[in-house]
Image 1 (cartoon, rainbow, N blue to C red):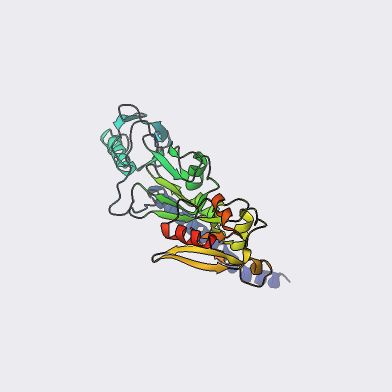
Image 2: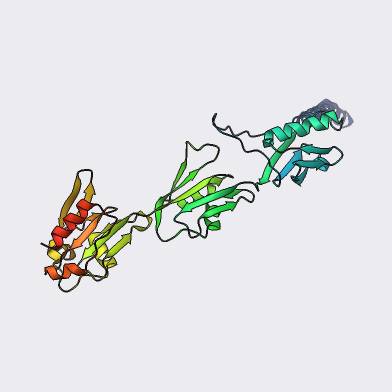
Length: 331
């Protein structure tokens, strides 16, 4: 019995020792590698995402009154938010004042790095500067907004917030909003209002100081003749307006209207085109209901010429369209 137990102990002892030695070696390697990784990570400066500008772009510079954020890598005691003073300077703790006006954020970061090196405060500083508020330039919002004008840029802004600052859009807003960037005026950005996800596009379209936002005006159609309220009607959000829709906007036909002799006057490069529309058949689904295009005139002639004296033709239409509408109504 004793010899068998001794044999079992002798047989297992080398394996146990081997496992203990292997575990010790693996743990040592893990500690060494972790130390090397920690050293390499601490020594590496933070990665900076640089967004390239067009070759013709003019970078925005820092001016007096702007708010900037100065971040010194791995040195929170030197990192802070600053308001650029009237003399164009900011004051860094332990380093003194430095002039930053007239510099781009990238140039200002380089100037602060030099100041820290020359003052022997840091051997290898890495500084990033971000402008959080421009006070010298604003965003100009024009077109179909309730309060057109120029508004100061306070921090990071989007197209959505720029429109909100102008009181929102008017009911006559068109299908597009154009953003012309100050640093790239040759490539304006167009945001379609009638497109799917347009609200998200407005949120993600960033606005910079000096940019101009132009909200287009909706196209309009005209309904004249023997209707309750002749006039101009806007095409909201590029929603198609058909002939019967146009009649409904004009609050319907009069009892004396010649519905079967209605026409659409459409201007083109060669003058005015006349498109007959039998509203009586359209109402009975016996004829197609045509879609009106911007600047189209739907003419509903009265049964007698005397009623024409009560009709005012839209002054913004061309002479050819007016002449064609007059001919139709007086027919």
